[in-house]
Every structure is written in structure tokens, then in C-alpha cells.
Image (tube, rainbow, N blue to C red; front, side):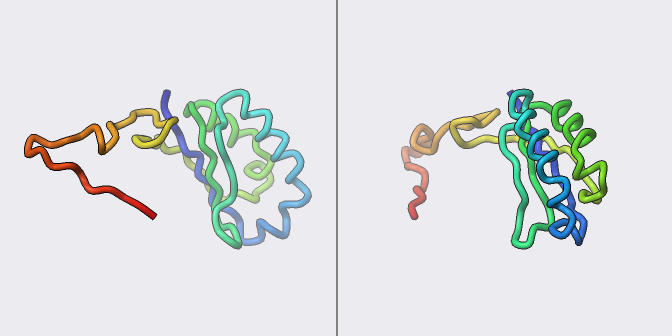
Length: 114
């Protein structure tokens, strides 16, 4: 498995124009959850970009080509980037947990808490 981020740059008037296309966009997005879309949404308040996480580059590219936000100009630019995920239950290329990584010196790695 691999992860790919579909990155959208949103038009300055995105919020003003979104309502007319939102149902079609969300319908396409929910349909795409069966063919590779894992998560998606706008970033920022007000949003200036959107990120959609896919499990295939082809699915991300196909989605952008069919998305009414793209075809109707609410998205002014888009690109697909491979995202090398290393931590988390669904990481595509997991790296061992710190508690599993005791160095040759016998020292434990630092911990993180909130």
C-alpha cells in the first residue's frame, strides 16, 4: 500500500461559489471512498487549500479530472504527491516504535506526552 495526497489550491472566491457544486463534489467524493479515497477536506479557516488522501496515484488523478470543483474553476491548481507515511496504524511504510528501538548503548529513546 502507498499513500498519495491530492493537493488543491482553492480560488479566492471558493466559499462564494461552492454551494452550487458542493452536492456533486461530495457525491463524487463519497463514491471515491470505494475506489481509493481515504480522507479529504478543506484546510484553513477560511480555506485556501484542500487535501485528499488516496491509496493510489491513478485514483487521485482520476478524481481530480472528474471533480466539479476542478472542472468549474473552484480549484485553481492541483497536484498529486506521494506521501511516505511511517507512523500510525495505517502507515504505508511503518518504522518501528520508539519502545522497540533500544540503541547499542542501552539507552531508551525520549518519550512524548501531552
